Image (cartoon, rainbow, N blue to C red; front, side, top):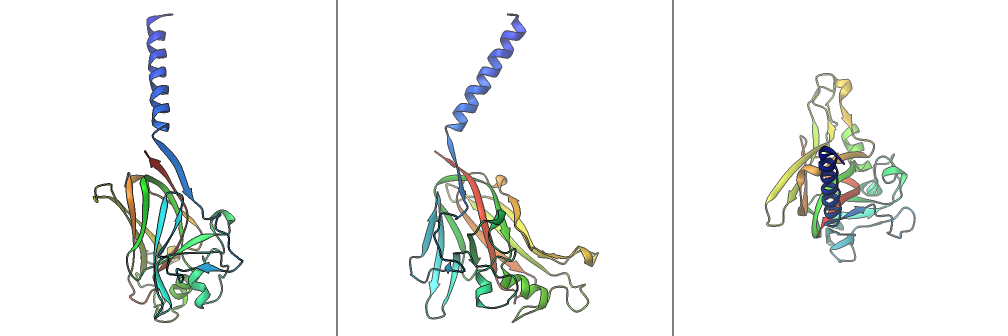
Length: 238
């Protein structure tokens, strides 16, 4: 065997060993919520006072307020409703059902901080996000206290944004990712949009985290602060 071939073989062997060692340091974890057993057209919103639910390596925090019959943080749902602006619409994904035509998904409502904790350090890879029917219809038609985005002539530069922040193992901010659930800031009004399908969002820039924090913001103070989440994938580090 020539010296060059021997050297190439050694390099390949080292890369293989490094790859194997790297695989041994993490385990893929994906939260698709399909293991939750629910009757059709139902949801869990924390009314039992448990304050959270877990799926895989992830703990989804919830606070329920019995005096107001409302909640903050995360709920889970299989509600189908893309037409009606009602109480049920708060628990409905606008695309009708979960991502990839699945049944179950998670709904978030911002009254206090929205948080996912990780039992072990995890490197988030991607997430799928969309609007609730409640928020999407409010933005499109101006229901309730919400303004119709774009205003009367469609030219108002309105927006509705979700910011994801990674919190590292020693409480440091590892990074942020912004995702617009609606955006009417384009010069060409035909490009304005309200997200109506499940969108992939890359989270690899966040690095290894022990917590994800979510914050909704809008150009209109009356926008209902809800969003839906599915298929949160990460790599658990050991």
